[in-house]
Length: 157
Ligand SMILES: CC(C)(COP(=O)(O)OP(=O)(O)OC[C@H]1O[C@@H](n2cnc3c(N)ncnc32)[C@H](O)[C@@H]1OP(=O)(O)O)[C@@H](O)C(=O)NCCC(=O)NCCS
Image (cartoon, protein in one colour):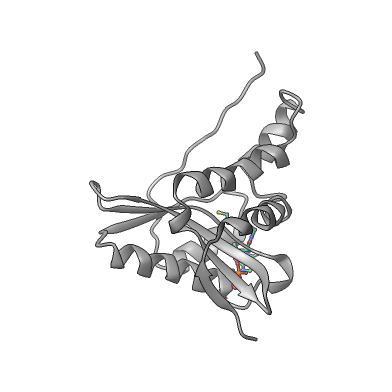
């Protein structure tokens, strides 16, 4: 199967939003918050999660890389660069469900790491939910070391 990884274009945003909402069911903090507190400010977790890719596209569109098969977008990885601290961060990564398990997630991560190296950075960071079994496996297997665990709290006002 031929899959290309190419730079993001503005017209990708809507499909990336759709894929994001579908892919993160069960593995996003936004949904955990909704399970705990219910609908907030009239918005569900999908609305909040879609805004994460909006942020990526607004703040650093040239750091988003899109995976495409037969002209169809099937995944993406977003990045941020902090040159002063030599750090590259990966805020979002997904592969459409039907294309998972064939190494595309790893390819997207390797693509982002090469991009960081090309930018002269020294280290890379990514985070995942404890409940995300694939993320926990994949990131370690891509050479990331666990450095901390964080506990998220939320309450209604
Ligand atoms: C995470 C994600 C991008 C991985 O994409 P992918 O194309 O399936 O990734 P790969 O095929 O390169 O690798 C998946 C790895 O997870 C492993 N895996 C699959 N199911 C697993 C499970 N239930 N528990 C542990 N490992 C699992 C696979 O064996 C593979 O590891 P290997 O290469 O050592 O054999 C994809 O699952 C996804 O989009 N998930 C939903 C969104 C998400 O969780 N994004 C990351 C948020 S931190």
